Length: 375
Ligand code: ZN
Ligand code: ZN
Image 1 (cartoon, rainbow, N blue to C red):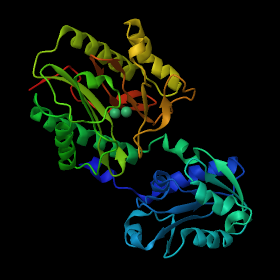
Image 2: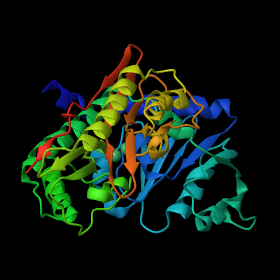
Image 3: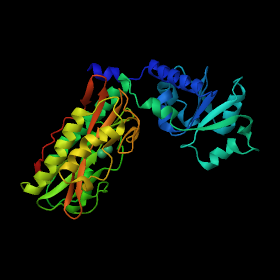
Image 4: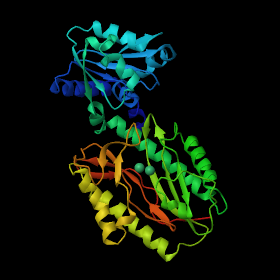
């Protein structure tokens, strides 16, 4: 399949990303950025290991990691990146590398991703790193990550497909009398069998009244006849996540109330997915579903944001929320996940992943959104 071949990272992806970051550094008057957030390290260099520091300057990109990854870097890291394998301290080696880069004076660090202990290594007046001027920076790389390139879109598409295959294999195995944890176990097995590298977040399986808890963990709660069952889960392919939710009914035909609430959520999901546009503020996208649910009298029962960006992390920029003033860029991938939660009764959420192109939205997930009856 040509899609699969396109999903293999080419160095040019990372070269283009580094070029965009360098433009942003120049605009901010910075000589470089110390990247310590691992998703940002992966985005810029391709490296997926668990220990790395990266410095990007106008002319260089250095990745420091340890001996465990000496082989992995050879296949993962883009050719634009200079790799340093350090056997003792990454930080000591970082200062040596920076000293070898003439003209590097004002550096930014990712203030949301540095521990207090590590910040002391360069912010304390007596520290080795204090010979450079450090500026806190937020979201320099995260903003770039909002706009996905073709390779990233292919990976997300694959992650969505894996999730849908796993859900299709799971639903026929769900019956009255099973615990939520047992359903989570089957779904996670099917995700692995379908090729998921892991789980982007703890699988949410919530039956009956527990489906009214928007972020319920799967528990020993037993599925009863006629229960709503909310299933929120995702897959990971080549580092990229998908995030889907479907709500079904188990062991009996749906009640009129279950159908009414489910239909309200399905229509809110469908109209928001069709009407969301690149360039729209996050808050206006959120209103596409919220206003509709409010008109039906369920406004207070939809207490979370309509969605969120998705990519290397399951929750990333851009925001799709009541308070999100920033426009949604073309090329971003967001979830559309309206829900109605009635305490003591249950809840319904339907979540899809949508690419915002300049021509309009394209919904990546196509799994049946009707109120399916299982068991
Ligand atoms: Zn979800
Ligand atoms: Zn989500």
